[in-house]
Amino acid sequence: TTPERLSTLFWGITNANDIMGARLCDSFPWSLQPACQQKTFDRMFLNNIESVRIKTVTKRAGVQITTTTVTFNHQLFEDSFIIGLKAPDVAKIARPGQFVMLRRSDEAWAQRLSRPFSLCRVEHDVLEIYFQVHGEGTRMLADCVQGDNIELYGPLGNGFDISPENDLNIIVAGGMGVAPFPFLALKISQICEKARNIAFVGAKNKDHLHNLDYLGEVGFDVSASTDDGST
Image 1 (cartoon, rainbow, N blue to C red):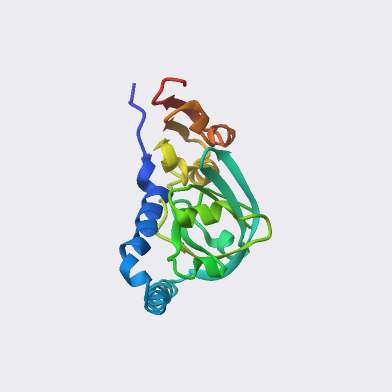
Image 2: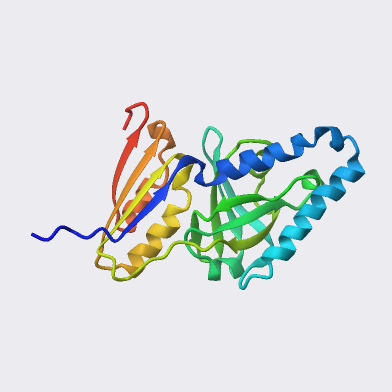
């Protein structure tokens, strides 16, 4: 018999999503600790970086700068959360594998850079962001409640390429690296109607396995494993 053709293999690792961005960005202001004593310099420096970044990315087609509204913010376990942001214009053009930059719309965030987050799911006009707390910036996002405003620009990145001719699609994700794959799995199920779809998902224990039911609902055969052997 002819071996089944492996069309697409999608990878996700722990540091691929919020953790890498949060650790980098959260550590950045503290590297300027001596200068931070000079509040005028510190605010001018960070705001200038943010201004240059925004002007650069908004030259790309489709990139939006908008103020979103928090529709929900659920704590899943320990320090992991999923937050919903109402952003109709971004939801219409977002692709799996893309990300957005977020910052709170208040004075407490004035001296902080935006944080990068993968798009976990897009439901109608709401973006769902799955993240873990790794510093003061992500802690502020975890403290958001329904009705709060979050500044967003995006979507950014090229996203995943999905071919309708694929016979087999495999997702391999571990830890927080699973974040962008629910959105991808949905699109694969819509585009590759006749393909076989498989997901291998890992985490440190069974309590940290997230989105397994959703992956199954959109037609993926899901296999899960954990570091401690609980699954």
